[in-house]
Length: 260
Image (tube, rainbow, N blue to C red):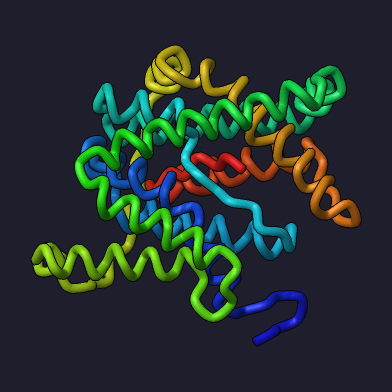
């Protein structure tokens, strides 16, 4: 089905599931360990993805910023600290967009360095995947082979089949019964202090900046230019989107650190 410039089919739906592998573990950590409001986090996650799709008309994923997420979960930040970091990082990206910092860095950064960062991140994720598979190599190997076999299948896209396989596995283990019934919950507003803004910047915010600028801003702009040369997106536009998204999501308690 096609509505305007948007295609709604199994392949597009499958593509929308591709980011769950990085988003869900961090989202669960934020909710369980840090105590974030699930409704706020998931609602703002959805709105951020929808608004990005409407704005750019491109498959640009949105994820939590990994350095901040790892620090917040490992150090058990309070919700107000997470929101404070979202506010401060949003302000930084807006400043970067206003003065064109990312664009200047991109002009001085060789493409080989950008590609190297992407390869390194891919290898790190692969190593983590192998570690997670250590408790179930047989099922993991089957899933890998199944995903490879269905990689170009239009009627049974790999991501959809693998998600259904995961749900079926949970059912066989009797884990679906622990899921509560759905209910309507509205996110509440949570405040934070100036001290928490500075504290979270020192703990993880400053370390997050180079990763986001290189991998989430410069690399994304380069990839869009390579795959959609007729629809380029500048680093300034991406920085602006990151800043606006971080501030909007902070205001609804469901902080979603936008990293493209």
